[in-house]
Length: 142
Image (tube, rainbow, N blue to C red):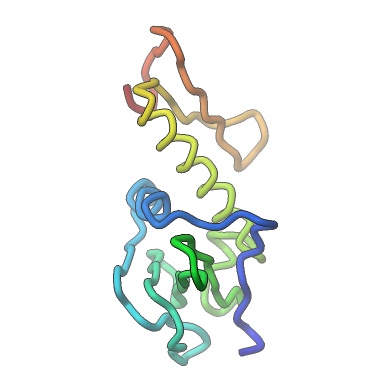
């Protein structure tokens, strides 16, 4: 168990529909109902769903919080499994992508246009939500 870490959320609990949306956008495989996830050559029971990311040997476990409809994500970020190269050493990229997916879901529920483009800061993206008819295209929806 020494390799398994919660993706620290500082009070943020994950919504399952947003996790599924994130997986679709990133072309990750959401394994609904999978009760274990791959880590350090073993399987760990105790998850409700899992996420498989192409190119990674290990998976993320998605665990429902007791008495809640929200979830937490756990993973083994040991270098051998590859998750650290995609999600950061502590899952910070997963948190950022989750928040972006949550904002996109909100915009779509309001019927707002949106686009995601590279930011001026290397390795980051910028999400723009259009409240009027300013949407000029890009990766996004209206």
